[in-house]
Length: 245
Image (tube, rainbow, N blue to C red):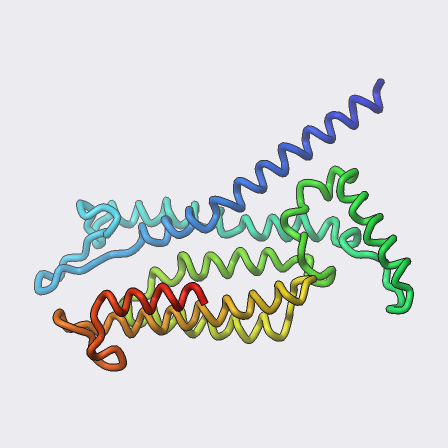
């Protein structure tokens, strides 16, 4: 029948939309990271010649490099707008992403409302492909995956343009501290255990960046400063333990 064909087309469109969104979500940080890294130039000491790290045959002061940058910039702009597309799609259905407001005493009604929302997620062709973008977050933070996408891009891509490894480490540590404070105050996840684990991860991120900066204090024979007297093996074991805590 006509209604059956319409429903089948809507289901197929929903499946293809979900696959496309999921693919873009998975490749976004990596692609943007490669694009940022492809813009980095290095200078030959004493010669004053700058070359592209991704392709040392390209002079960073040449018209060829300017054309290369032009091509990368517009592609980078397109990829950086992908999370905004997520935001637009989520905003269209944001009124359907939460249960009606009620009293805390009406626990049974709350359970029924949540069950009804789950059924709607499976039957609504507009909600189904977006589930992976909002599931797990509290209703008022239906947009938080967009924030997470830009946070991942910031750590994986933008940090690569910081000129020296030591500065990169301390900038990463500062961003990690900011993330710790934000997630502690916002607590965007539905489960309290997830919020606590996420805060622990934020602490781990900034501590790892600090530790990595300290590891760079190496004079060729041993570590200096805080890590003076440590061997490479000892420093590596400490790094592993820090990432398993």
